[in-house]
Image (tube, rainbow, N blue to C red; front, side):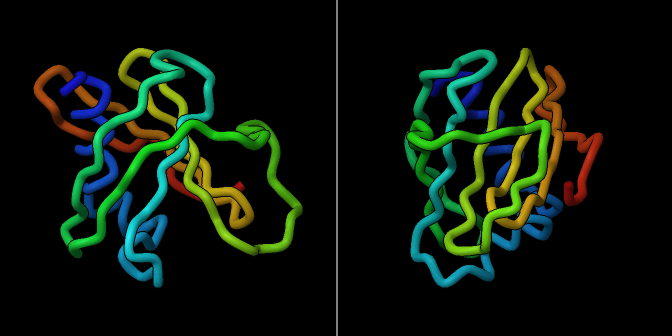
Length: 119
């Protein structure tokens, strides 16, 4: 498994990430995680992995425009979690709700969050 995929799994399965994006509270059987096509590993798709609540997460390439610098004013229809990576720093944005999170993964696999909020 590529290092980026191991790091993504460590972040997305972390309690703080799950609580912020409410992934386990969704009605969806599986969760889509979209690679924005920006930053490092912009074409990498990871194999599915399981959340602690039993839902599966699958990665896809985003086929829609995402602006990590500006809040969306769209109505909430189907929020999508989009990410990009630069070195060991990952930035996540949930479209429509504007939930935003920045996380880093240390060499020992420790996950830390430097920004959690809403645009």
